[in-house]
Image (cartoon, rainbow over all chains, first blue to last red; front, side, top):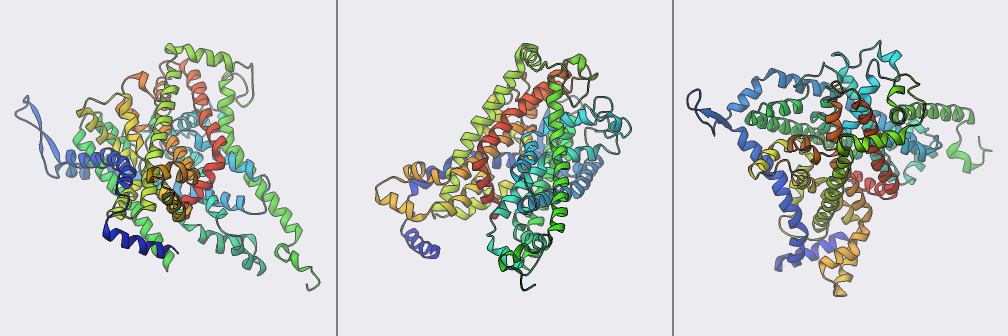
Length: 302
Length: 293
């Protein structure tokens, strides 16, 4: 059906573009804003990352001149920045699978006939998503604090905000906020599977776990990939939670995550170096999520 | 085996195992319900307490109920700047998400329903935009806005929030699936213009997707932290997240501010929870459409 309409509109296109005015009216507002607030900043970041500040003599006027890749040399020599990248990669390697694993289990339980009270659980697990990262971090900051916490019997003995554990305390905040959201995305994908698909497996006597593993999970893989990509992007961009935790914990430095490094570099201010950090970080994020997408797609088609 | 009635076959596993499984599932879900809700419960309890009772009474149960008194104090503290922040957040998130949804909906609709040169290019660029983290744009946006002396204004936070590449993606997917070509063709035969058809017919069919786009854009603007942190200096322009962050970082110098941070945090999440509850019928369908690809 759709191929027939496709063909007819291809024929139309060869004569002239039908409804040209309407298409422009629909597309232009987004295109213009996208150009201004997405493409222009990307271009500008690349441009300023290629500039250096030059002074004539020690007290001369500062001016920006083309510096080639010299800011990038500084980026690659910057130890704290790469430490922060390593830190968020470690964070992501643990937190993303944990969070998505929980989300998947909850989604499967919501979808299984074993669970009563689905409406309640679905809402209860989703409520934290309505809490902004900053607020969630403030709340958990209190909950982890050794003397203000309602669980001070635990928090007075385990230093959740110390240098060893603070990264994982932040991981807990992020997990707490996003498990329910990811659960709902996977659950919606499960609901979209027609029930006849299970019938055959069920008649063959496969149990709930078997059906979940060999029928449901493969079918909702696209949704899981989607949530994984967004989680990877979010992990590399970690900023609000650690920034808030700085007022609860002295273990968080101004270069704790890559984005904190960008922020503190820009407040020096050294905008050119900060722009170079931003570009490297955006490229790394893009490369990582793109690779992940390609990797999972190849695995699907095998 | 053969004398079992056949309709029972699909659920033929023993009832004993089933009861155990049900109980196990319920326990797991119950434990995690506590994990997800206790922090919010604690925040609520803390917000109802007088400063003197905050540390001296059971942190997970009520003492004297002074929630209204606390809200009253919050409303007057520092010239009532907190409610100014709340209003700013409603403006940034409500206004921004509304316009962003309209713009993304139109663009996604055009990409789904019309054929024109550059269509795939636009869609691929938009998809690339989904992968570009918004925080990576904050600093260059600041540098650009500062060239036009527009930093530290309402617009510097609102304008970048009007762009939602994910919204375009979702609107395109949903429009292809839910707006039949025949319907548009019929509207054409009736003499309706393309734009009019979109606003009278297509918008209605795309409504669940548009509500989803609106909600998620609303949440992402409401939660946005880096952009206002970089753009704004003037306290009266802050959204509520940035304002509470600023207060929270002064807790060590001004201890009485702690109470305001807690009650302020509670008040700031209530509007979002209510919005989600009221609109859940819509966004749940829309969410499914996005993930099916």
